[in-house]
Length: 109
Image 1 (spheres, one colour):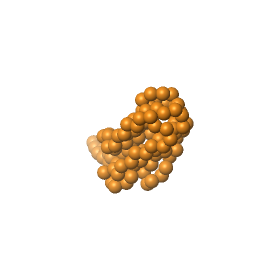
Image 2 (tube, helix red, strand yellow):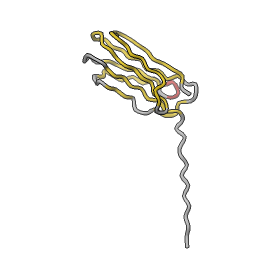
Image 3 (cartoon, helix red, strand yellow):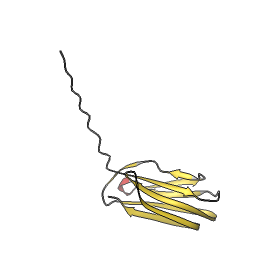
């Protein structure tokens, strides 16, 4: 009789972060810049979605800065920015009548 024991080790993905943008009104394009693990900047745009999501970004370290910057060039519109870490909202900002650049940032733990 052969008995085979298999052990699976869960891969350590560090702290996870995701970013969301919700356009509360209007229809103008916008662009987004956000930080990935290790401080790498990612630029997305133009975006014309009501709800945008970065997806789950892995390997952030405790104390690392997570940030998202919204850049609009159209008429003044309202937005909701969120930073989510390990499935929980850790920073949120409603922006009213924005035109130009707004930034939201927080350290993750």
